Image (cartoon, rainbow over all chains, first blue to last red; front, side, top):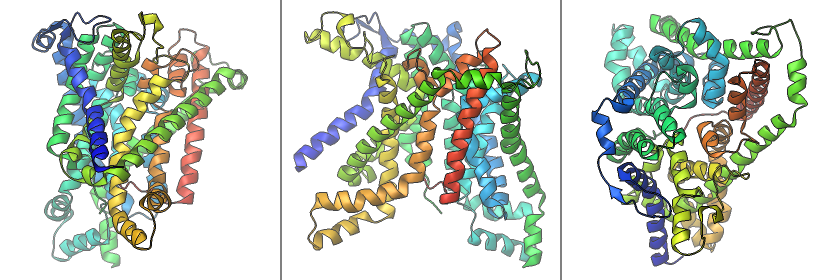
Length: 257
Length: 291
């Protein structure tokens, strides 16, 4: 392929990658955009005003989504880090890692369907705590998988050195292990945050429509054929992670240690 | 050495870690699968009347389930094949641009799009009143909404496949690029060129096999992930056949209580198939998360 052709193709790909963002934002600003118009008759910020009003519960959805995702990301990262160490140094590492993969690859919604009975039994269905717990069941094993590459002979030797010098477990975590794992902790936090932020099926089953996260809101508006509000909720879903990704793409992919 | 080993093995944090692992990873799996199995065999549930295999017989004699599994396999296979083809071409042509410069940021952006937003976008793009239909109308290619061949809720799952390709292609472009760098494929390319190979032949016989071989476990996991996806086929799929997860939840949420054990039969079948594949993979080669 010629150099010029290559750049034209790169331009086309760039357009295709950016177009969904531009289109969703435009849709959220549109009014009276009916067939066969290719451009909306009115472009206004009126739809966005709903965020600052109590109407529609968009602000509640935004806040509850942030709270759930932060909780899931925090607990998954913290607990995943601690658990992954035990698994990495265990004689049964392979078998235990297998259990980490199961929730990640089984369809979360089918998994939620199988577990729904227990959430009802413990009065957790339809509650924020229940949704956080259900998402943890998916995100926490994923965090264990992410951290599995961190533990090595080098880390083990460093920990032994701390013990030799009189340090305790807490000190070895605080002074050696956590500082060494800062980058990976950030990656894990961001990825588990995204798992929670993007989750729909599991949240719909366990939350029974009462925990209205942004994904639930988008689905609800699509079903009501209110595409402008659906696009607005979609903007709230995609713009924060997109900006974060643009600012620091390191958060998404980690390099193997 | 033994002292250190014991010290490490018996720390309270480690015990806390493994307890959490049992509570959050092992126990839910046992409880979930166990409950679904008991329900599917009539040992549990609202209409429980003792052990029976009638629900299994009903499901296994019903072609809807086979269509559903076949449809899921077809959708995931089509979406994966197209995504991998596009991502491979993109990585081989633009590996330097994916690595640095403006495009290296752009390529990450689609990762911020969840399935539900991709579905909304595809509805707006490919449906009868969607953007492509409107453009076709303005160009005089169609004369009404009905003339446009809707690619949403269609029998071939074009909308579902398009949404999945839209999400998977950038992911695999970035993933293949990390392999491209770690395997030093540029150096291999130069070596092959020095030895007289043409660039296209080098790409086809050296680079592509290395990338695909290294990426195989991740590609397989992603394939399984696509097979089990829910919101995309829920919004963009037809009433029949439905993908496995949509069929399971539809049966689970019906008012007819007799459908619930059948939903758990489908869930158990799906889980057994997926677990068998993963266990086989674990035995064949060590799976490691290398992204």
